[in-house]
Length: 290
Image (cartoon, rainbow, N blue to C red):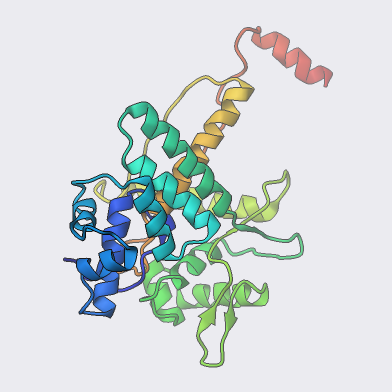
């Protein structure tokens, strides 16, 4: 049985049984005397083998068991709603059910994932600052500029500038022991025309993406898709991209960086041709008229 070092976070899971197994492993790591029998008794299961069968996926999680688990896990109202949807998703019998409950999970994840939007007065000019903030969130990453610069293949001075910027804008603080603290791991730069901060950020990482073509194909991937969309379909694709991003963040959200690289997934979606059904010269005339 794998030893779980930190308490499992419900929203990191897309499989109810895996979540429950990790909860059990964590509790046992804290209390070696903890057992299936103890947990079953705490839950109020009359038959103590029921829990073991559930964790082996040899028995479905019934509505009654779901309610007992919610109480035992001390879930909030929102957490209980997510857990119920997670159980339904994990035990769906058909593709249609899986898609329906999956949509519910994404809706709940979307409501939860709401990064702070930078105020117009916050002048975050360094394109690596969001990445430095992400690295600081890992429990095993030393906060010294030298170590961060080694991870990012950047100069120590560049990383130091980023730390100073994050601190001056109130995105990170230092406690009495000198350790960095922060309220939010992520933030959003407002997507408005003429926003130089957003432009600088994406131009920097697009340049990094171009340079990444020379990396070993085993650790990078380039893929281009082309498809025609109406304005309404464009909005639908954006929703799907957002749901996909949330699912990735929920699934790959480890507490440490051990044996991992930090990856950047830069998503681009833009028109490469004029609207069909009109002659090109007519569209040009319309633009001139405007």
